[in-house]
Image 1: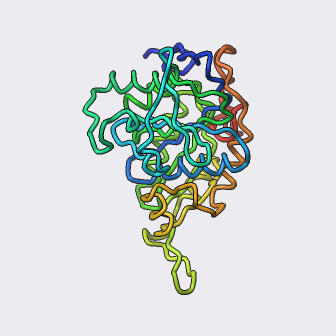
Image 2 (image 1 turned 180 degrees about the horizontal axis):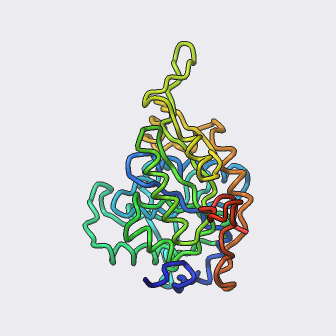
Length: 290
């Protein structure tokens, strides 16, 4: 079988008007777990620390990032064969296929190779400027587009988004194995829709039953970096394009972990092999990039 590691593929080059230091992918083993919401919140929280943040919406056929940031009416501009990302109210730079469509509800009826080409262009033909952290909202699953991101972009680390349902073990396993195959470290897990806080007494109501995400995270020796509740107020802000008004610190631990990641210098070739545990089995990729 041919080598599928990132080092086996030539990375897309940044253009002269981009200086991206870190690339953080946000993935899920299946759709419907709120991956785009988590990506948006991570971008917002990172930007609040003073970091320069970009958000690349690689979920080409299901883009929702522009709506959450309220930038759907903004027009992309460009010159010299480069596009400029739009900026949110608080300065997050965003690139999404929805910003190129005449109507945000128009479907993207493209085959895999065309979708992959668009993602490469969002990296190499967008003038991102100086970016400390570029968050990539990955498509769900482990198909063509996810492979394109891993093979074409210098991804420094991954956050896996999951939910409390019984399928969580399978979902996390798929995402961890994909990351391990592609040689990209997993920084940790974020559980979305973790619980509902009673509006009267703040009691924690586990809508989907008892969560096993923590023990699954331990099984892979990964930290659980955040638990996001079902919050109608947060959902309303996202629907209104005001995601930057979310004030809680639910993902502080995730931001701390992301800030420990060192740049992936692809010129150095392959990363060292994953560490061995006491039994000699490979660690599937926990902790920051070294």
